[in-house]
Length: 122
Image (cartoon, rainbow, N blue to C red; front, side):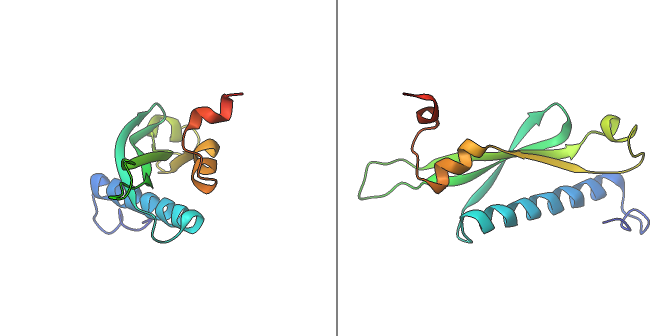
């Protein structure tokens, strides 16, 4: 990635490569946590410090013909490419990405908790 701008890639191509690198790294992390068969999808999102931004969702409950359970996608993290205005004062002309995981979401998956509200109920 570091040399692609020197080799003629424009900024848009570079940003796409950084985003692809970020998504690949995060997908590998999630599959290491929940298994290689984990189904993942990306949803465009807004976060104030990143542009572009996405949320990663994983298949939490898959619809079964034997039950009435519906297919559910669960958001597990938000991420994006850091805005230039934030990066330039710290490290000019650099690109970085950021992400945040929801611990409650991870616990829901690992311990098969059906509703996030159960964490705060008595």
